[in-house]
Image 1 (cartoon, rainbow, N blue to C red):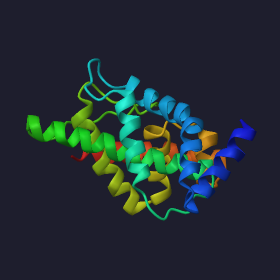
Image 2 (image 1 turned 90 degrees about the vertical axis):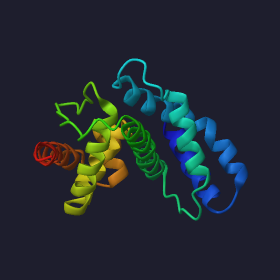
Image 3 (image 1 turned 90 degrees about the horizontal axis):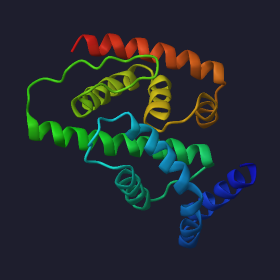
Image 4 (image 1 turned 60 degrees about the horizontal axis):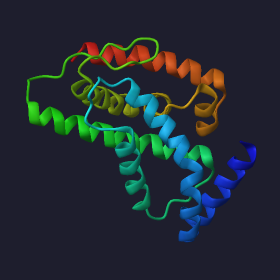
Length: 188
């Protein structure tokens, strides 16, 4: 993993410098990791969800390719950006489904220890996204912790690496963010 981490960082920096061949070399190295993150998230979705893991990864990849002038720092920075893109893709999908159904207001999302999505993930995901935006305005790092752990599927240690904080800080932020989100969503 350590060699792969350094290789990924070097390729990301080469890509930042305009080397399109670096992107071609990078893709197979990060695809499996992105697939695992997407699969972990999609496993929490309801059976028969129309957005599949591969489609989610492909959409994230297409958005990544269109990002210009990003100065990639390292693998953790890349995974953080991918988690944010995954959140946007899933939220956009959920909102489009919600607009199609127009069943009224968004139901409350119950967050348990693992922040699992309930039986109506499309509407819940949109409500969670709105609450995360409010949390981001209040405390950006806690919002990033939720985004990386929930949408990116990163472990506590990976989240700490991405945010350049200690694992204990991530655990504390994770706990406080869940409480804050529960209160925010209960008021909806």
